[in-house]
Length: 72
Image 1 (cartoon, rainbow, N blue to C red):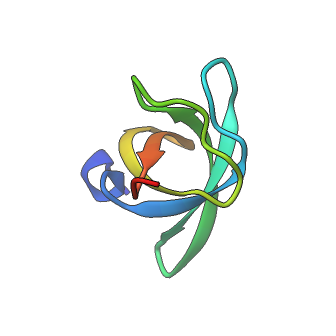
Image 2 (cartoon, rainbow, N blue to C red; image 1 turned 90 degrees about the horizontal axis):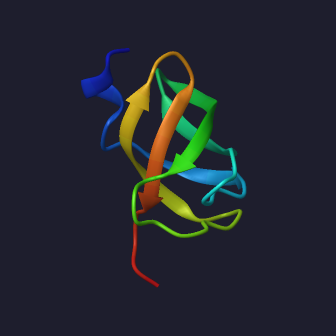
């Protein structure tokens, strides 16, 4: 899947994402769900386990930058 296909997809944090941390998110893709290493998008703070996120950048093959999909 190319970069354009990943950007905008939603996922759920399964390992805390935050500045200085490499977290994990599960993203529904290709008819299933896959895990990706995750970093916070610039200006985004810590994202706790369970937070719904949106992919804003994709670095093949398994790294994404994410931000919260909804305001709290």
